[in-house]
Image 1 (cartoon, rainbow, N blue to C red):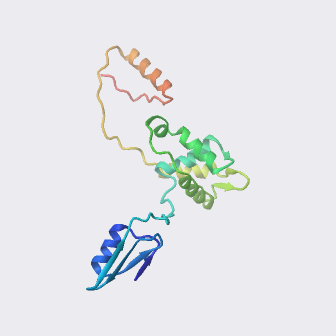
Image 2: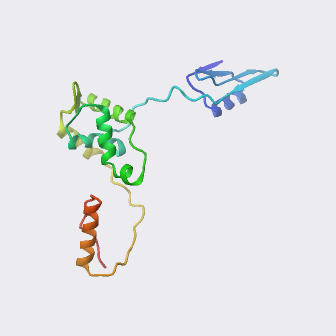
Image 3: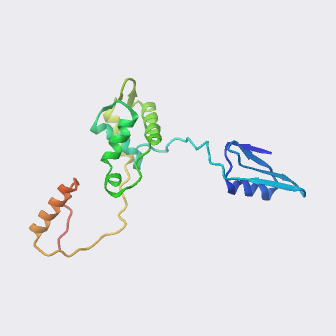
Amino acid sequence: MLFMPFLSERQLKELEEEGISGIDLCGNCVVVSPDTFSVFRSGGKNRFPSSSAIKNIYRKNSSMVGRGFFVYPDFQTVQDIRATINQRNLLVDRWNKKPMSLSTVSKVLKTMVEDLIITRTETIRLLQPDKLLEKLRENYNPPAVKERIRLKIPGNNKSILKLLSEQSQQLELSLERKIRVC
């Protein structure tokens, strides 16, 4: 008999095929008596989700927590940090992407405390901005350009640059001067 915190339906079927009985703490089970009977019960939700650490908190989405400390060097609560990050995230704000969870923010903060970059006493405060900046720089992974779009816009170079400048200000985006006008 195998005892686990959680067994998925796929895992239960695999146990049944091997003739092994198994039960989890969520009420899912397979009980096998060779050549006599078997009982199969699944559908119980996992009440023991993984709480593994984030591999690299200074890369990709989780790096937004560290970058938030350059906007505000101290916060009252973890919820304040999460709100700030999700408010500043264009993907959440404009394109309805999933906001960062409280557990992700908490895991990142735990690692930052271990790295002696922040402190969590009365407030959550940035201690070593230079070290944080260095970690973010070392782990920065530029986005991959998946496609380029060629556009033909009527007008001269000056009017096109003016239009792009106005749009970038309206969207609160920086405009790089790498625009090639053909």
